[in-house]
Image (tube, rainbow, N blue to C red; front, side, top):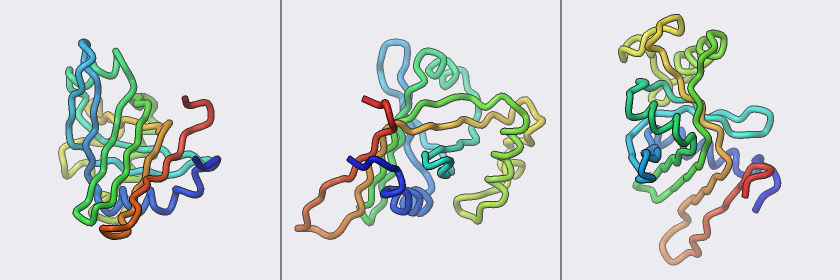
Length: 162
């Protein structure tokens, strides 16, 4: 296990940007998983991965995250590259961060970036503009090297994660 995320950063950012869409799972009130497809952009801030999702704040998603903020993100490509990110998810409430997230999505080249207004997500000042912040505590990366090769995923955990 790496002590620093730096050893994972290049592969993590490349694979997540290449795949674009991921499956995000939450947990319902009975402990059952619920999955949906989302479009995060991950960055690295102060040596730690941080994900941003522009999503609709549905009653289901809101109730799941109110009960348990733990989510799991799963990326897979036909090239057999895989990233799993287990995260804490929090709704972004402050306007300054909403503006920053909006700028990130607008300034990142497609297909990873996009204009939130064109997808009906509004602007940061709108009540419907609801970014979700993902703070990974565990990341697993597997860059496929070919069949017959040893397929050992690399794993990183945030300081203090068990």
